[in-house]
Structures are given as C-alpha cells and as structure tokens.
Image (cartoon, rainbow, N blue to C red; front, top):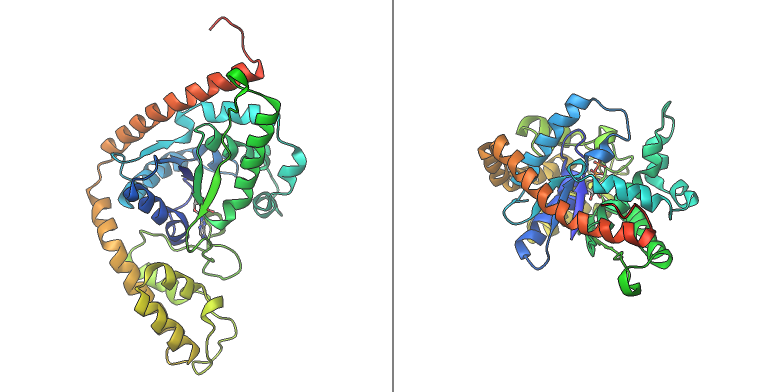
Length: 329
Ligand code: ADP
C-alpha cells in the first residue's frame, strides 16, 4: 500500500480526515506493508520558493509522524530522494496519450486563468503513476480528488503490460486500486471547492486552538439555513461531514436531529465539532512537540534507502523490457 502528500502550505484537516487518518489506521492494522511519500517533485509544478519547500519537507515529515506514520512501522520517505520516480515518469510518458492528460480535472482546476502553466503540471499524473507503479503498490488510499489520477495509473499499468513484457512474458506493472476513507471529500471553508492547500480555504491541522476556532466559526454550512429557526440539512453540510469523521456515534445522531429540528444553531454545532477536534489533537500535539528534527531526517534517509532498493529492482525490469541502456552496466 502506498500513498503520498505534497509538502505545500500546511497539512490541513481535509488531508487528515480524507487521507492521513486512514493511513494511520492501515499502519496500526498491520495487515499490509505500507509506504508513504512526501511528494516534493509534485510540489514544483506550480510556482514555489525553494527555501520554503525545504522547510515544508521537514514540517510535513514532523506532522505526519505526529499523526501516527511511525517510521518504525512504515516506510516514510521523500520522493526526490529516490531518483527512479522521475526516471520512470519519463518512460511511462511514452505510453500515456496526451488526450488522457487533457481530461484531468486537477490540471484544469490548477491551471485555469494562470499566466504560467508548467509542462510539469500537465504531466503531473504521469509522475503520480510512476510513484505508484514503481513499488507495484496494490492499494492507494486517497481522497476523492485523486481517483481520476488513479484511474489513469491503472490504465497506464495496463498499457505498459500490453506493450512490454518481463522475463518469461510476465507483467511488470501491477494495477493499483484506490481506497477511499469514509470522508473522501472535505469542502473548503468557503464552501465553493474542496479544501486544498492551493486554495487558501483550509484549517491547518496543527493550528493553535484560537485561530482554529476563528476559522471554523465562519465556515460555510447549509446555504438555505438563513435564520436560527430554519431547519438545516446535514447531508449537504460540510460541518456534518466532519462530525461523521470525528465525533462519537451518539453525537452524530444528536447533531443530525438538532440540525433538522433547528434545536441547535450552526455555531453550537461547530463548537461541539471544535471540542471533538481538540480532543483528537491532544495526543498528536504532544507527540509533535517531542519529535527531534535530526532524528526525523535520519528516518527519512532510512525510508529512502528502503524505497530505493525496491525502486532499483523495478527499474532493472523496466529498462530491460523496454530495451533501454547499453549492456555496459
Ligand atoms: P492538497 O490538495 O491540499 O494539496 P494533496 O494533493 O497533497 O492535498 O493530497 C494529500 C492527500 O489528501 C490525498 O490523498 C488527497 O486525496 C487527500 N485530500 C486532499 N484534499 C482533501 C479534501 N479536501 N478532502 C479529502 N481528502 C483530501
């Protein structure tokens, strides 16, 4: 099982509820071998500051470990530490039709109206396919926004296997399957699009309680609920979606009941959500405060070494199957 996250901006509550929390659960279950990658080479597809990126890589590593991605139990590494990702991406580009990339909604979303749209943003899904296929990952736990990219990765695996064959005619690529959490799409605070680091509509997971509450308090809810006495519709409300992810079963029932009967206003409902978030965050904050950056960097180095061993073996198969390279090495 493999998944990744971009070290851009800050880890937000959408990332946590949609992805990172399920990652921790998979590690704790221990039924699958897991790998998690901080995808810095994806982060450079939009304008960015090199120094900030470097800082963010450290910050994301710390935050992810604090969330339970314990390097003793999983392989946590930085994408660009394993050069095979970008190498495989180039090779996979040769079996990826441009038309498929043109259909990707994330490209349209992130590129629309921008003065500069990089080729990297266009070929982003090819690199993501490489991230996954390099390790022959079978399961990729992601939020809903990544399902289209994952479909492309499956298609790419099929195309590659159709065109190239390993020793004895075997398939080299494994088709990955997406695994969605129970809250695969958390909307942004503005309610207009998904919560995303690139949209400035987030609440940072490790934000201090006061700014956390200040942002949550103003978050978009049911647009038809104009007055306190109007009954709300939990099924369209982002706050209810978050309750479902974080609150106890009896609270979720209570929220639905008090919203639809207008017994609670939105602020009261948000206050309960805030309290439950803070409870969930206490152990994470404690863990985060104890982490030592030097040890974290060492863990990333160890993770990269482990990842590199798998990556190198896949690339030998790939180069041989594709007829690349001299016989000198
Ligand atoms: P972002 O869009 O904030 O830059 P990433 O692309 O780094 O996030 O995604 C990291 C993980 O978090 C992915 O598995 C992605 O599907 C998931 N994710 C991102 N935003 C959300 C969201 N708003 N709701 C649910 N999951 C999300």
